[in-house]
Length: 597
Ligand code: F6R
Image 1: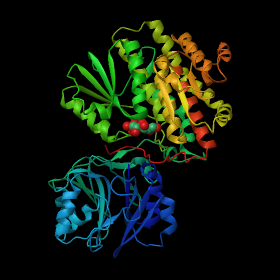
Image 2: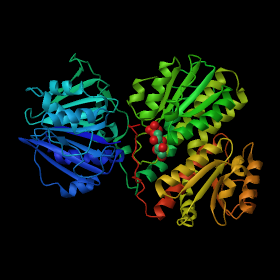
Image 3: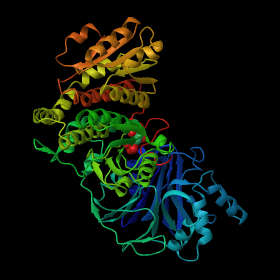
Image 4: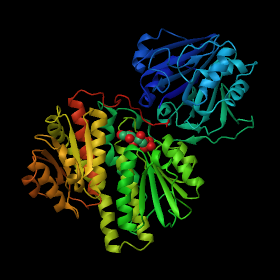
């Protein structure tokens, strides 16, 4: 939520900043702005998208600058509330991602000392505080200002008093510096700077960096030098480009065969499963996550309990934090997060650690905050730019399956024959996803029939229940059609009342231990007038008798089929939204990486 950028180097800063901002736009897109140092500070800000900013920005020369793309928290989307924010004399400019919790108290004091505010944001206290502390050294004035601030921040600051310098700092919001051949690149996320360089420094909490032409000097809040490691990012820069696809979401859906190959690469053999982190032997597992990652967690519960016979609880991270959770050192708490930056998930895993539990992360973004908090297993999905999670979800399911098999093997709950079957299923998964993708034109045609639907229901049982929840979430977030996912066995306990003549119901009915029960549920909704779209295996010819439309997945192990069905539902949601003309990569009111509570 909100993206900050900065550039200092040999090139003109404006085009570089625009490029970085465009790549970070998925973090927020209600307003954007830049500030360039060129004797004075020249700012340009606009309500709306980065393209709106570009269209109103005059030619501004200068090789040092900062920028911001906003997801509003304090103050409505407007050019006044857009960052960068300046001090009273327009000599200091700041971009900020995070929340200043004590801003009202700070703002009142600053106003009493004569500061004039021009926005409704919490962030504007920062330039005024830095101005108040400034005595000829930007770094120490930033340090002093931050000592008065409570909350989270990733900031970049420039001042006319110190040309050719950017001061950055981080606490609980991501921040990375790229070291390129023609300059230094600051961003909230590595994906934004990949095109320019793969060599990066990840800033940690409580660190302040000073970037000038000679390099990056990092100190802690007390001014003590911190030796930082330069890390080389293995992601391919192409993976953060649209590469001819109309939307990132579609590109990311189509990347899934390659992603799954990468997720499994070097991790599977008939002897066992090799993962980046140890899986401790525990009495209980608690999975915490938000949104799509939470749905992956629900799938995790089914597969871990099935294959390893370890009890698993799954909790929404924002609830877990506040329920005084009962956990101890006999538990393993697993946080699942694509971004590794979701505020509620990070807070929940820290809460778990403080109560003595063992911790593990399942994460996609390299070097993200969670990787600094606990051992992690990477999903290896590559940069995901579309706001709606797709390839990150299927790679999470794949990792959870690997974990379940590994735990099951270690606890001798899986026989060799079962292991062989599962390994062969995993090896075929990428090819099977490709076969689903080959049916995209059929899915598109089917989706078109439902472009004007007022409402949708998704139902599944067992491991297909989380798939139903995720299918509904995908559809509602990008098409804005109200959609409810539920466990089909719950129909008679309430949801059946929602069924009316013609309501589309998506029934995930691949062959598994509850297939017949699922057919019964389909009959129940059909009898009340629903139009049923069944997701079924290729060889299931019986299903045609029960449903109005069928979308197929290859015949696969019942624990692998949910991953294939998820891909069908991603395409279905994409095409419904596409036919409705929705802005698919940037759904209204949403942003990727929810770094605020
Ligand atoms: C939905 C979506 C969100 C995220 C959620 C958690 O498509 O992307 O529901 O899954 O915000 O994000 P991460 O996984 O980054 O913690």
